[in-house]
Length: 242
Image (cartoon, rainbow, N blue to C red):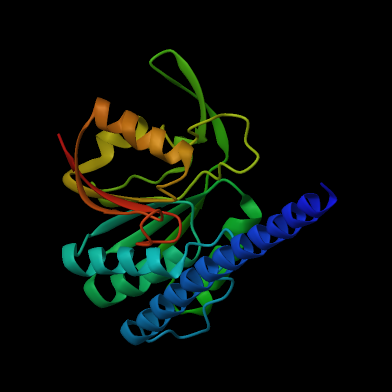
């Protein structure tokens, strides 16, 4: 019996080691793909300053690559980003090349100011506007939602591309925090506008997109899943129609 217990303990440790190795191998594959995507960005954009903080909460390089390709393909005149940062830089560089302007909203005043400083450091202030809009309560079909204060948005022409990467769901008690984007911005979207959703494989974002597709005319143009190794956190590209 003691021998069997020892054998079980050894096998248990081996299973744990093999599981850790599989996890490490998967993380290495993800990191390799992100490095590839970052090199691709540097190959397409002549950055005026370094790109900083590309991990953690920042938009992953692979998603930035997807965003850049769609901007280059569609040449949107007006881009609105919900949650600014690295994506705003990439969008601003694309607007510098192709024309257009990117507006980025952030609910955190300090982060918005840092984003303005970074945009200025890259010489892109003519192509990007950072907007501080705190979260306030909105009523949508009788439900209360925390979302950006629309009063802080400037008068915008029709939005050709909407990049959804905020508000941050982390540590917020309300689920599906990004859902209000389409109900509240529907009147501002151009017919045929693109909607790019970051973190699309997370549970909250899955539910958001599913609810959007029930309420609005949306066509899925691209769906890159983390489950199949196509992206790190999932990204969906949707086409809006009235």
